[in-house]
Amino acid sequence: MEESSELKSKPQRRILIATDGSKTSENVVDFGIEIAKFSGAKVYVVYVIDISFFDTVMMDESWVKNAYEKFEIVGREAICCIEENAKAAGVEATPILLKGNPAEEILDFAENQKVDMIVIGSTGKSRVERFMLGGVSEKVVRNSKIPVLVVRERFKPESFVRCDQEDKDIPANVVSGEPQ
Image (cartoon, rainbow, N blue to C red; front, side, top):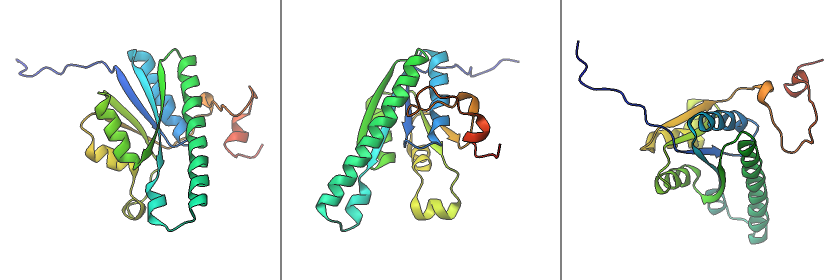
């Protein structure tokens, strides 16, 4: 039997790992770094400050400025921590801080940088929550022209790395909230 089309694997040379700085995004990072490590890809670690919230609510200008600065600090810490983890794994990583609509910014950056794959998390929102709030990962999947790996929320204690802790061994049962 002759096969008319041959499936060819394209190596991933540029991978965008999107993070929101949350604990649930740690699995996203693990998967993205692991893929990059085995494929020899460069990683872009992207955090987007969602400024659409600031436009929808009438707020004091100083409050908005203060809130934006806090989001920027959280974003910088998140991407720098991931950059350190990637480099420790032998993966070249570039931290990127963007502002705007998260899904749009992720897609625009991926297209402009000719990214081969987007790795993004999903918190598993219900249909009602997605309808009411929208879902960044869902919007990225629906509108992306390149492959998107959606990593579902789960906990992996064996690969848990926290940059805000100084080499402390935290037993898995304490981290996961299980009684000792």
